[in-house]
Length: 220
Image (cartoon, helix red, strand yellow):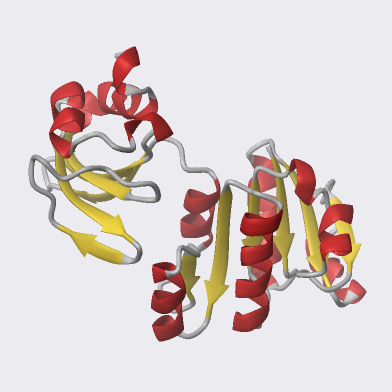
């Protein structure tokens, strides 16, 4: 996948190397050319000097073929504006914006802009939003038998009930994150576009759960 990053500070440079190590192509944008020194000599991706929410700059960075975009500059407004352009103008599927103000982050999340506030921020969380495959563990019981995990669901599950997911996967849906809010679902709760699904499952059943969630209900 090609991924565009706006902001080459400590966050952006670390993110760029982490994504390259995973085999993805990376372009990073920063208004200050000297910021690219943080990348070091081993960075093989593309560097673009310019304003990260400028359309021509984004096109130069390869946004038109990008599968993901991360706005991690030092400005909340710039990050949100760039994230909206990536999603609404260039139709990038996986977009995330780093926000310093947790209160504002919640507002933007409600507007459908995936955000990560600075206080709980980690590179791992950013990558999770850019590469949403597999099950990401959030808690394990002391015996290592049961885990709570956020599991990526295929778009084909949108419009289906939580009970359908549970019956197919054998896991129990603990809660959903919808527009930045946690909700406790019931059997007839319908999965909506953008929902993050958190499930309780056995460690030895992870592969079955991931396979069920990654395919549509008609394919399992």
